[in-house]
View (cartoon, rainbow over the protein chains, first blue to last red):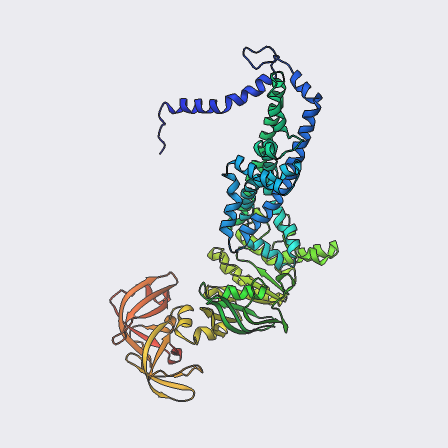
Length: 270
Length: 357
């Protein structure tokens, strides 16, 4: 039985969505506005802010930095996530529950606290702040997300598939390569994409741990001090927004495909 | 062929398998039968190499297998869930194990085709795993194991996921297949009819221990104790007094059956002059009208259950602590006997077995 919702609910929902997304939608709008200040009324269409971006050396190098950090983070977090997720879903060991809880903790810890602690520790170890330290911090933040995605990947298919492979003569490594990996491949891709997206957008940890090479969000933050550069920042923001949206969508499609595939396997009466 | 010496698997104080002693012959269709938790699957998994005994040794062809991992044992397994690789098609599933043998392409293809023909899946090689029915998945699992030409094929409740008709058909097919390939089959099942219908020999297990090992007929007709008798089909239990005993036979007396001489099983220990007698429900026969028998008991029908081809009658006999179950085929009108009717039953004294408690 379905009940009609109260008549004010649609209005509330519309306001809510507007509050959530309208400011974000202003970003692309003003990024093609032919005016140095983001004010209404609009002053006509232009691509010039985007063209400026390409010529900006500092920006391009910040983008490369972010790309490098993002890729390194995605690979490292996913590798660690594969080991962790496999351990948690396949083996029984002492301290399993507290351990998986601790891995998930960065999800709820205040990021600024994590960032400051990391900074203190890295300075104490005598590490120079660089893109490497940023990457290490990002791995820490991305690992919980990567674990969640990968655990659902590993959970989906039964232990008996790996046993069947061993039974048919395959070694542990061969089993991983021929059965486990293809089965969790969508989850691995999805983990890579999610980690990359998170790292690419991340500000606080990068702010504390980056040295002289800024990542893209750090560069943007620096640009905000100059009003004249705002339109270019808006253009850049638009590109990042669209990029993130596409990556996360692909990740979600892959995750669903993985779930569907493993569910067909689990059902005996298809 | 397979020899289990004193095989024990304990988890802390709990013994999943307790000093199992067993020899399985080459080319035999052998079943491990028992209720869930009796240790039969643990035993099978130890033969396969997925579990390690805490004590004892497992020999295949005279070689101790303990310490040899599953991928280097001459055994292959059909899993209860079939464990068909979902990312591979039928052919690729069957060829999975062959890939490591590095056969020529034509030889590999020939063996895959041969295996698929054996399980009657000719022409379905290109099917994806998720396009298969339950029965087909089971056949793929079989082909995938048989193509490896193992010395021993292990089957973990392979028919439990199939519906009744298909299960009965597969029982016959598996039996024929085993005879034609001549490989030793070890089947785990909790279904006594499956074990009886398919096996050369059966080991009945309870609580981690092997209770009895014998041929289906012998195990059904001469169970060693009440537990085994009860697990394999129905059995009427009657308390009896031992009035005479020699090396080979015992003479017992019951109120209803009078004095009966039965074979004395080797393991029988007379227990303070009393014994439990067992008789299968189908070994009691309804006597019609004025038909006479040298051995008969009289009583009253107190309940009746109709099963189509047979009727189960519950008959109260004066002097028996429990009523007798009787199974009668319906070709003489057993389904028309009303509840409350007087009834006479014939029995063969040879069908009475003395049971250890």
